[in-house]
Amino acid sequence: MTQKTTSIPGQFRWSFLLPQYWGIWIVICLLMLLAILPWSIQHRLASALGRFAFKSLKSRRKTTLRNLELCFPEWDTEYRYQQAEQVFIDMMIGVFETLNAWYRPQWFKQRVSIEGLEHIQQAQAAGHGVLLLGTHSSMLDAGGYICAQYFDPDVVYRPQNNPLFDMLIYRCRATIYANQIDHDDMRGLIRHLKNGHAIWYSPDQDFGLKQGVMAPFFGVAAATLTAHRRLLKISKAVAIPLYFYRYGDIKDPRYKILIQAPVTPLPSEDELSDAIRVNQIIESQLRIAPTQYMWFHRRFKTRPEGYEKLY
Image (cartoon, rainbow, N blue to C red; front, side, top):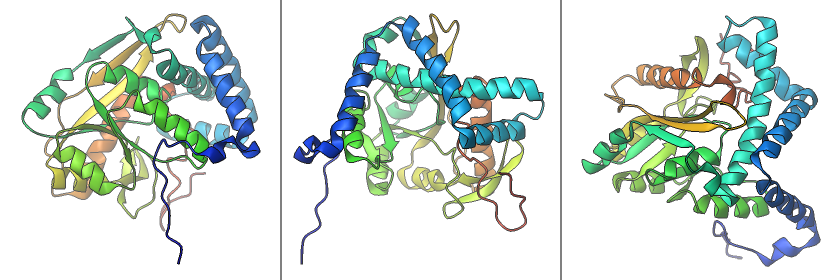
């Protein structure tokens, strides 16, 4: 019987030098070159690439438009289309911001402000871990980097399918996050919370109803994760909403970290009530900068019997 081998996250393999990975190495080199470009060129490239992606990725465009239609019914058709295109542009801008966070972090100097840091500090001083309730923002790891200027965040991550990309991303994130916790490592996640760590966690995507309930999101029933209730109950951690976003002139952007007071009581005795509260928190965050969210994911894909299909 052969023993199963497990790879160590971020570990280099000699197999990465085989021809099957050469194309990826070229892409990696290209990304590193893009990271050293002036911001004036980066944001122009991002705008052009975002518009191209919006026109080319028809399925993602359709999903984005449908999500915005469901969540912002007050927007007229023309404005909704403009905002959908901006979602793709902001996604590409977020890619360049991530590259800057990985390879040129000094670019963010004097561009970041924070509000509510005392909520994390007080919770940790009282011996509690902190589960930071956030969203899948298009700022990607740039948001993690700007948070790391003020406190030591951990992150829950999902390994990439391609092992070379997974190694690259893991190593780059290691310069930002204190710890990276595999999404399947629940014991590790609980251990870090019990040890007083602050962990970024995003319960804002549709993973079905095995670990969730149907709860309103922007007034539309959506499969909503409830796993964080168990994490909080077992670890005695505190749930604190965190949101980071870009604002101001895109030619000279600024970044804001918004940390709100702990959500109490969470968990309560009512699973549905907790899901509704968390969704309301996420809604309020997204209304600050709507196009900086990954609306191209099918947030309402789970439709149990009795619920109308939306896509």
